[in-house]
Image 1 (cartoon, helix red, strand yellow):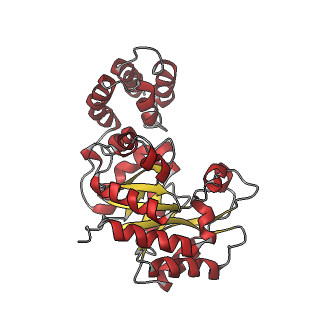
Image 2: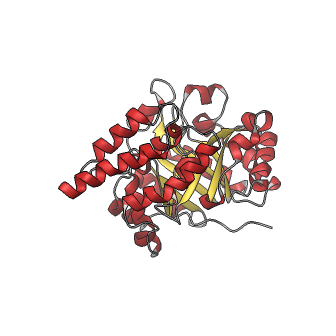
Image 3: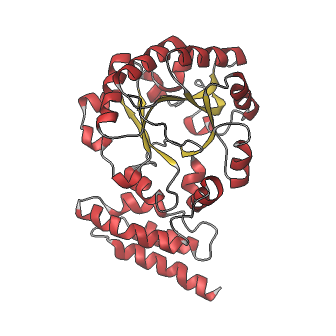
Length: 330
């Protein structure tokens, strides 16, 4: 039986080294409804490595999707079944990452040149799980950057059973640009993604790329089925506090940034007891007070102290006091 589709009006992109389980737990104090994604996990890591390390999460994180990197249909099918067994709400195939390491393993954005491979992978994944199977991709890559190439890719993968396409509105230049440059240099073509929504009304089209303001996100929802943001969610996390009231019409979980920190502290204590270093978790809250009086002091205190041996939640409380002192003096 097909599992219910998660609400994809607003989601946070999978980001390597950023969308960890600790980040996702913290974010749930800012938005209850945003769909969250794991970092990309390769099929090899799941099949041959420590599955629990990559798949474990807290129930608080739902709705949460697992993003897979791979190209072999049988391996992807096996990993999609793992995603269902672990209780994820969606399994997503990465066809958008442009890094050399990913290309060398024949996964990520380079697969846009192989729509038949992606179609076989999607078909195998759907046969192995009742979870929704989605694809995140670019609008093109070197040598496959025409509108017709994009349409053919969507058509072929949709024929295999994919209903939801998360489209980063830039091409990926695989030869000559770094992954960072590929997030910034190729021009955004939102009109292409809007045109996909008109061309394929039976599909769910989610747009990704370059969104930093809630007004711009709401405007996009007039043209597409959902918006995914990446760097803005990490560099300006308080933006997420507006998702529930402005997109979903429900109250925000935390009214103030301080409340979000206070909610996070018991979780930090639990994870510290499990042996997770404070710095591995506190780095996710560094930008919470971006633009606030005392925000730099908050960030500096965490940077200078969270890595120290034996650092505990007192470091976070001391950092928070710096912001409150500045706010009181303002």
